[in-house]
Image (cartoon, rainbow, N blue to C red; front, side, top):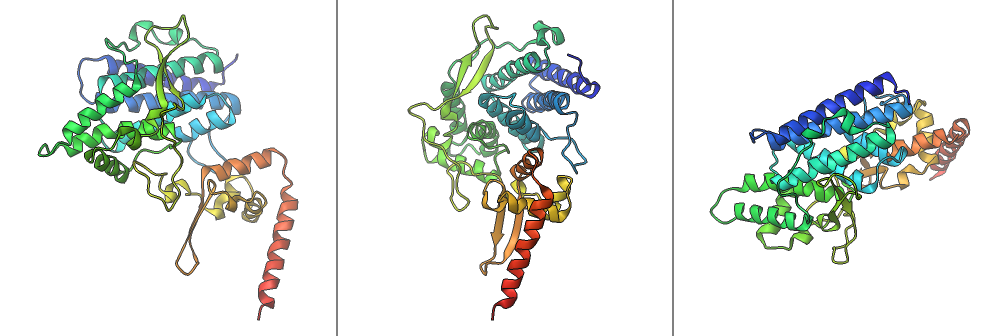
Length: 368
Protein backbone atom coordinates (compact mmCIF):
# COMPACT_ATOMS: atom_id res chain seq x y z
CA UNK A 1 0.00 0.00 0.00
CA UNK A 2 1.34 3.39 -1.01
CA UNK A 3 1.21 5.77 1.96
CA UNK A 4 0.37 9.44 1.50
CA UNK A 5 3.28 11.71 2.33
CA UNK A 6 1.47 13.59 5.12
CA UNK A 7 0.25 10.30 6.62
CA UNK A 8 3.85 9.02 6.61
CA UNK A 9 5.00 12.18 8.41
CA UNK A 10 2.37 11.68 11.11
CA UNK A 11 3.45 8.05 11.44
CA UNK A 12 7.13 9.00 11.85
CA UNK A 13 6.19 11.43 14.62
CA UNK A 14 4.02 8.78 16.29
CA UNK A 15 6.89 6.28 16.41
CA UNK A 16 9.29 8.94 17.75
CA UNK A 17 6.92 9.85 20.58
CA UNK A 18 6.24 6.19 21.36
CA UNK A 19 9.99 5.52 21.51
CA UNK A 20 10.49 8.40 23.94
CA UNK A 21 7.53 7.27 26.07
CA UNK A 22 9.06 3.80 26.38
CA UNK A 23 12.50 5.26 27.07
CA UNK A 24 11.12 7.38 29.90
CA UNK A 25 9.17 4.44 31.28
CA UNK A 26 12.28 2.24 31.35
CA UNK A 27 14.72 4.75 32.78
CA UNK A 28 15.77 4.41 36.44
CA UNK A 29 15.10 8.03 37.40
CA UNK A 30 11.51 8.77 38.53
CA UNK A 31 11.79 12.48 37.61
CA UNK A 32 8.64 13.58 35.74
CA UNK A 33 7.99 9.94 34.78
CA UNK A 34 4.30 9.88 35.77
CA UNK A 35 3.66 12.98 33.69
CA UNK A 36 5.97 12.52 30.73
CA UNK A 37 4.94 8.95 29.86
CA UNK A 38 1.16 9.71 29.45
CA UNK A 39 1.94 12.96 27.62
CA UNK A 40 4.23 11.30 25.08
CA UNK A 41 2.08 8.17 24.75
CA UNK A 42 -0.97 10.38 24.16
CA UNK A 43 0.90 12.40 21.53
CA UNK A 44 1.99 9.17 19.86
CA UNK A 45 -1.60 7.96 19.51
CA UNK A 46 -2.81 11.34 18.26
CA UNK A 47 -0.21 11.19 15.49
CA UNK A 48 -0.88 7.50 14.73
CA UNK A 49 -4.62 8.06 14.44
CA UNK A 50 -4.02 11.14 12.27
CA UNK A 51 -1.87 9.01 10.00
CA UNK A 52 -4.69 6.46 9.65
CA UNK A 53 -7.36 9.16 9.19
CA UNK A 54 -5.31 11.10 6.63
CA UNK A 55 -4.58 7.91 4.72
CA UNK A 56 -8.32 7.18 4.57
CA UNK A 57 -9.70 10.70 4.07
CA UNK A 58 -6.88 12.90 2.81
CA UNK A 59 -7.51 15.42 5.60
CA UNK A 60 -7.39 15.73 9.39
CA UNK A 61 -9.40 18.96 9.60
CA UNK A 62 -13.13 19.53 9.73
CA UNK A 63 -14.52 22.10 7.32
CA UNK A 64 -14.08 25.59 8.76
CA UNK A 65 -11.50 24.50 11.36
CA UNK A 66 -8.04 26.04 11.28
CA UNK A 67 -6.45 23.39 13.50
CA UNK A 68 -6.10 19.66 12.89
CA UNK A 69 -8.13 17.17 14.91
CA UNK A 70 -7.52 16.87 18.64
CA UNK A 71 -6.83 13.46 20.18
CA UNK A 72 -10.43 13.22 21.33
CA UNK A 73 -11.73 13.97 17.84
CA UNK A 74 -9.30 11.43 16.34
CA UNK A 75 -10.58 8.75 18.73
CA UNK A 76 -14.17 9.57 17.78
CA UNK A 77 -13.49 9.39 14.04
CA UNK A 78 -11.46 6.18 14.35
CA UNK A 79 -14.17 4.48 16.42
CA UNK A 80 -17.42 5.87 14.98
CA UNK A 81 -16.62 6.68 11.35
CA UNK A 82 -13.72 4.46 10.27
CA UNK A 83 -14.58 1.65 12.73
CA UNK A 84 -10.93 0.82 13.34
CA UNK A 85 -11.12 0.91 17.16
CA UNK A 86 -12.97 -1.59 19.32
CA UNK A 87 -14.94 -0.46 22.38
CA UNK A 88 -12.12 -1.77 24.61
CA UNK A 89 -9.49 0.16 22.68
CA UNK A 90 -11.61 3.29 22.70
CA UNK A 91 -11.93 3.11 26.49
CA UNK A 92 -8.17 2.73 26.88
CA UNK A 93 -7.37 5.67 24.58
CA UNK A 94 -10.02 7.84 26.25
CA UNK A 95 -8.43 7.12 29.62
CA UNK A 96 -5.02 7.93 28.16
CA UNK A 97 -6.37 11.23 26.80
CA UNK A 98 -7.69 12.13 30.24
CA UNK A 99 -4.39 11.20 31.90
CA UNK A 100 -2.50 13.27 29.33
CA UNK A 101 -4.75 16.26 30.03
CA UNK A 102 -4.32 15.84 33.80
CA UNK A 103 -0.55 15.49 33.40
CA UNK A 104 -0.46 18.63 31.25
CA UNK A 105 -2.69 20.84 33.38
CA UNK A 106 -2.53 19.31 36.88
CA UNK A 107 -0.63 16.56 38.69
CA UNK A 108 -1.02 12.79 38.65
CA UNK A 109 0.74 9.92 40.39
CA UNK A 110 0.53 6.28 39.24
CA UNK A 111 1.84 3.15 40.83
CA UNK A 112 4.42 1.20 38.86
CA UNK A 113 1.87 -1.46 37.97
CA UNK A 114 -0.85 0.96 36.85
CA UNK A 115 1.58 2.92 34.68
CA UNK A 116 2.80 -0.36 33.17
CA UNK A 117 -0.78 -1.41 32.34
CA UNK A 118 -1.32 1.85 30.45
CA UNK A 119 2.02 1.60 28.67
CA UNK A 120 1.81 -2.08 27.77
CA UNK A 121 -1.83 -2.09 26.66
CA UNK A 122 -1.10 1.07 24.65
CA UNK A 123 1.62 -0.77 22.75
CA UNK A 124 -0.82 -3.63 22.13
CA UNK A 125 -3.29 -1.23 20.50
CA UNK A 126 -0.55 0.54 18.53
CA UNK A 127 0.78 -2.78 17.20
CA UNK A 128 -2.68 -3.88 16.04
CA UNK A 129 -3.49 -0.55 14.37
CA UNK A 130 -0.18 -0.52 12.54
CA UNK A 131 -0.69 -4.09 11.34
CA UNK A 132 -4.37 -3.91 10.36
CA UNK A 133 -4.63 -0.36 9.05
CA UNK A 134 -1.18 0.53 7.71
CA UNK A 135 0.14 -2.99 7.05
CA UNK A 136 3.26 -2.35 9.12
CA UNK A 137 4.99 -4.40 11.80
CA UNK A 138 5.85 -2.52 14.99
CA UNK A 139 8.91 -4.72 15.49
CA UNK A 140 10.32 -3.33 12.23
CA UNK A 141 9.75 0.24 13.40
CA UNK A 142 10.80 -0.19 17.02
CA UNK A 143 13.51 -2.52 18.38
CA UNK A 144 12.03 -5.29 20.50
CA UNK A 145 14.64 -4.69 23.19
CA UNK A 146 13.04 -1.33 24.14
CA UNK A 147 9.57 -2.71 24.85
CA UNK A 148 8.71 -1.96 28.52
CA UNK A 149 9.00 -4.96 30.82
CA UNK A 150 7.70 -5.28 34.37
CA UNK A 151 9.21 -7.63 36.94
CA UNK A 152 5.76 -8.00 38.53
CA UNK A 153 3.11 -7.56 35.82
CA UNK A 154 -0.38 -7.29 37.37
CA UNK A 155 -2.93 -9.94 36.43
CA UNK A 156 -5.99 -8.73 38.35
CA UNK A 157 -7.04 -5.15 37.75
CA UNK A 158 -9.36 -5.11 40.74
CA UNK A 159 -6.51 -6.17 43.03
CA UNK A 160 -4.42 -3.36 41.56
CA UNK A 161 -7.23 -0.86 42.17
CA UNK A 162 -7.59 -2.01 45.76
CA UNK A 163 -3.86 -1.55 46.33
CA UNK A 164 -4.01 1.94 44.83
CA UNK A 165 -6.99 2.93 46.97
CA UNK A 166 -5.33 1.54 50.09
CA UNK A 167 -2.45 3.92 49.39
CA UNK A 168 -4.92 6.77 48.86
CA UNK A 169 -6.70 5.92 52.12
CA UNK A 170 -3.38 6.03 53.99
CA UNK A 171 -2.68 9.47 52.53
CA UNK A 172 -6.12 10.64 53.70
CA UNK A 173 -5.69 9.36 57.26
CA UNK A 174 -6.37 11.98 59.97
CA UNK A 175 -3.37 14.18 60.71
CA UNK A 176 -1.38 13.21 57.61
CA UNK A 177 -2.09 16.40 55.63
CA UNK A 178 -1.44 14.51 52.39
CA UNK A 179 -4.65 15.48 50.58
CA UNK A 180 -2.91 16.81 47.41
CA UNK A 181 -0.92 13.56 47.13
CA UNK A 182 -4.09 11.50 47.50
CA UNK A 183 -5.89 13.52 44.80
CA UNK A 184 -2.93 13.11 42.44
CA UNK A 185 -3.29 9.31 42.76
CA UNK A 186 -7.08 9.46 42.39
CA UNK A 187 -7.04 11.32 39.06
CA UNK A 188 -5.74 8.46 36.86
CA UNK A 189 -8.19 6.05 38.55
CA UNK A 190 -11.09 8.42 37.85
CA UNK A 191 -9.85 8.83 34.27
CA UNK A 192 -9.86 5.09 33.66
CA UNK A 193 -13.19 4.74 35.44
CA UNK A 194 -14.78 7.49 33.36
CA UNK A 195 -13.40 6.10 30.10
CA UNK A 196 -15.05 2.75 30.85
CA UNK A 197 -18.43 4.49 30.92
CA UNK A 198 -17.96 6.81 27.95
CA UNK A 199 -16.49 10.00 29.42
CA UNK A 200 -13.80 11.65 27.30
CA UNK A 201 -12.59 14.54 29.46
CA UNK A 202 -10.49 14.48 32.64
CA UNK A 203 -12.18 14.54 36.05
CA UNK A 204 -12.86 17.98 37.46
CA UNK A 205 -11.76 19.07 40.91
CA UNK A 206 -15.34 18.68 42.17
CA UNK A 207 -15.38 15.09 40.94
CA UNK A 208 -12.05 14.35 42.60
CA UNK A 209 -13.29 15.99 45.81
CA UNK A 210 -16.48 13.86 45.81
CA UNK A 211 -14.43 10.68 45.36
CA UNK A 212 -12.11 11.78 48.17
CA UNK A 213 -15.04 12.50 50.47
CA UNK A 214 -16.61 9.11 49.70
CA UNK A 215 -13.34 7.33 50.51
CA UNK A 216 -13.05 9.20 53.80
CA UNK A 217 -16.55 7.95 54.69
CA UNK A 218 -15.53 4.38 53.94
CA UNK A 219 -17.70 3.83 50.85
CA UNK A 220 -17.02 0.70 48.80
CA UNK A 221 -14.67 1.45 45.92
CA UNK A 222 -17.04 -0.24 43.44
CA UNK A 223 -19.57 2.49 44.22
CA UNK A 224 -17.00 5.26 43.95
CA UNK A 225 -15.49 3.90 40.73
CA UNK A 226 -18.26 1.79 39.15
CA UNK A 227 -16.64 1.89 35.71
CA UNK A 228 -13.48 0.22 37.01
CA UNK A 229 -15.56 -2.69 38.28
CA UNK A 230 -16.35 -3.54 34.64
CA UNK A 231 -12.68 -3.63 33.53
CA UNK A 232 -10.30 -6.57 33.52
CA UNK A 233 -6.79 -7.37 32.31
CA UNK A 234 -6.61 -10.07 29.67
CA UNK A 235 -3.61 -11.67 27.95
CA UNK A 236 -3.25 -11.51 24.19
CA UNK A 237 -3.90 -14.48 21.94
CA UNK A 238 -1.53 -17.48 22.16
CA UNK A 239 1.76 -16.82 20.46
CA UNK A 240 1.94 -13.19 21.50
CA UNK A 241 4.36 -11.49 23.84
CA UNK A 242 4.11 -13.04 27.32
CA UNK A 243 3.82 -9.61 28.93
CA UNK A 244 1.49 -8.05 26.40
CA UNK A 245 -1.96 -7.28 27.80
CA UNK A 246 -5.25 -5.73 26.78
CA UNK A 247 -7.92 -4.05 28.87
CA UNK A 248 -11.41 -5.49 28.51
CA UNK A 249 -14.62 -3.62 29.24
CA UNK A 250 -17.04 -6.21 30.56
CA UNK A 251 -20.24 -6.40 32.56
CA UNK A 252 -19.40 -8.58 35.51
CA UNK A 253 -22.36 -9.98 37.41
CA UNK A 254 -21.25 -8.19 40.57
CA UNK A 255 -20.64 -4.88 38.80
CA UNK A 256 -22.86 -1.96 39.76
CA UNK A 257 -25.03 -0.74 36.85
CA UNK A 258 -23.61 2.43 35.35
CA UNK A 259 -25.48 5.11 33.45
CA UNK A 260 -24.92 8.73 32.54
CA UNK A 261 -26.14 11.15 35.19
CA UNK A 262 -29.02 13.41 34.23
CA UNK A 263 -28.24 17.11 34.07
CA UNK A 264 -30.14 17.76 37.30
CA UNK A 265 -28.71 14.73 39.11
CA UNK A 266 -25.66 14.49 41.35
CA UNK A 267 -23.31 11.57 40.64
CA UNK A 268 -21.21 9.94 43.35
CA UNK A 269 -17.79 10.26 41.75
CA UNK A 270 -18.24 12.17 38.52
CA UNK A 271 -20.70 13.64 36.07
CA UNK A 272 -20.58 14.41 32.40
CA UNK A 273 -18.32 17.26 31.30
CA UNK A 274 -19.21 20.93 31.64
CA UNK A 275 -22.06 21.59 29.14
CA UNK A 276 -20.41 24.87 28.14
CA UNK A 277 -17.43 22.82 26.95
CA UNK A 278 -19.30 19.82 25.58
CA UNK A 279 -21.83 21.98 23.71
CA UNK A 280 -19.49 24.76 22.63
CA UNK A 281 -20.60 24.90 18.98
CA UNK A 282 -22.58 28.00 18.02
CA UNK A 283 -25.79 27.53 16.07
CA UNK A 284 -24.85 30.54 13.93
CA UNK A 285 -21.64 28.76 12.86
CA UNK A 286 -23.17 25.32 12.21
CA UNK A 287 -23.74 25.92 8.50
CA UNK A 288 -20.31 27.48 7.99
CA UNK A 289 -18.59 24.48 9.58
CA UNK A 290 -20.34 22.21 7.08
CA UNK A 291 -19.70 24.38 4.03
CA UNK A 292 -23.25 25.80 4.01
CA UNK A 293 -24.80 29.21 4.56
CA UNK A 294 -26.11 30.18 7.98
CA UNK A 295 -29.73 29.71 6.88
CA UNK A 296 -28.97 26.32 5.35
CA UNK A 297 -27.36 25.35 8.64
CA UNK A 298 -30.50 26.33 10.54
CA UNK A 299 -32.59 24.33 8.06
CA UNK A 300 -30.41 21.25 8.55
CA UNK A 301 -30.69 21.55 12.34
CA UNK A 302 -34.48 21.57 12.03
CA UNK A 303 -34.56 18.79 9.42
CA UNK A 304 -32.46 16.47 11.61
CA UNK A 305 -34.39 17.44 14.78
CA UNK A 306 -31.06 18.15 16.44
CA UNK A 307 -32.71 20.25 19.14
CA UNK A 308 -34.56 17.13 20.28
CA UNK A 309 -31.31 15.21 20.73
CA UNK A 310 -29.86 15.76 24.22
CA UNK A 311 -26.49 14.42 23.10
CA UNK A 312 -26.30 16.96 20.27
CA UNK A 313 -27.99 20.09 21.65
CA UNK A 314 -28.00 21.83 25.02
CA UNK A 315 -30.15 24.77 26.08
CA UNK A 316 -30.16 26.59 29.40
CA UNK A 317 -33.07 28.91 30.16
CA UNK A 318 -33.74 31.58 32.75
CA UNK A 319 -36.50 31.20 35.34
CA UNK A 320 -38.74 33.14 32.95
CA UNK A 321 -38.13 30.65 30.18
CA UNK A 322 -35.88 32.82 28.05
CA UNK A 323 -32.91 31.19 26.35
CA UNK A 324 -29.74 31.91 28.33
CA UNK A 325 -27.37 29.66 26.41
CA UNK A 326 -27.65 27.11 23.64
CA UNK A 327 -24.92 25.12 21.97
CA UNK A 328 -24.10 22.11 19.82
CA UNK A 329 -21.83 19.16 20.57
CA UNK A 330 -19.55 17.22 18.24
CA UNK A 331 -22.44 14.80 17.67
CA UNK A 332 -24.46 17.54 15.98
CA UNK A 333 -21.69 18.10 13.45
CA UNK A 334 -21.34 14.35 12.89
CA UNK A 335 -25.07 14.09 12.20
CA UNK A 336 -24.86 17.03 9.80
CA UNK A 337 -21.90 15.61 7.89
CA UNK A 338 -23.51 12.19 7.55
CA UNK A 339 -26.74 13.79 6.26
CA UNK A 340 -24.80 15.73 3.62
CA UNK A 341 -22.81 12.66 2.65
CA UNK A 342 -26.10 10.78 2.36
CA UNK A 343 -27.34 13.25 -0.24
CA UNK A 344 -29.85 15.34 1.72
CA UNK A 345 -31.52 17.93 -0.54
CA UNK A 346 -30.26 21.15 1.06
CA UNK A 347 -32.31 23.41 -1.23
CA UNK A 348 -35.52 21.55 -0.39
CA UNK A 349 -35.05 21.51 3.38
CA UNK A 350 -34.08 25.20 3.32
CA UNK A 351 -37.25 26.05 1.39
CA UNK A 352 -39.36 24.10 3.88
CA UNK A 353 -37.51 25.75 6.78
CA UNK A 354 -38.38 29.23 5.49
CA UNK A 355 -42.00 28.22 4.86
CA UNK A 356 -42.24 26.91 8.42
CA UNK A 357 -40.82 30.13 9.85
CA UNK A 358 -43.21 32.19 7.74
CA UNK A 359 -46.21 30.23 9.03
CA UNK A 360 -45.07 30.60 12.64
CA UNK A 361 -44.49 34.31 12.15
CA UNK A 362 -47.97 34.76 10.67
CA UNK A 363 -49.51 32.84 13.58
CA UNK A 364 -47.75 35.08 16.10
CA UNK A 365 -48.89 38.24 14.33
CA UNK A 366 -52.47 36.95 14.30
CA UNK A 367 -52.52 36.48 18.06
CA UNK A 368 -54.59 39.12 19.96
